[in-house]
Length: 77
Image (cartoon, rainbow, N blue to C red; front, side):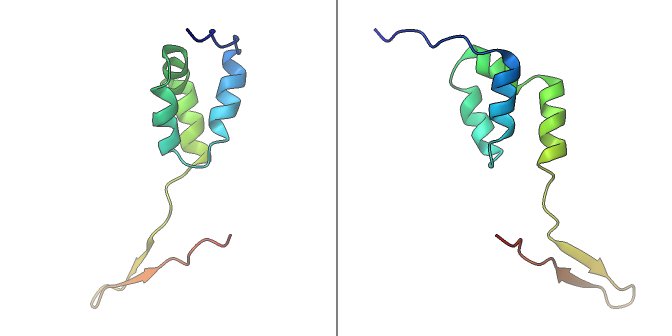
């Protein structure tokens, strides 16, 4: 049987989870154990995630008579 993981304070877990580049990884982390799920599903944590990982802008709609779509540039890496 595997030994239990050492205790990590909630603040440390939040800091680690906030550094994940893909928000989908939070879903994976929340499936690991109950303590991870509680951290990831907390309202304050989710608010911080949304502020740091805003949804991307796909483009802009313009024009009244002849509407058009101007795609946003791809992010530079």
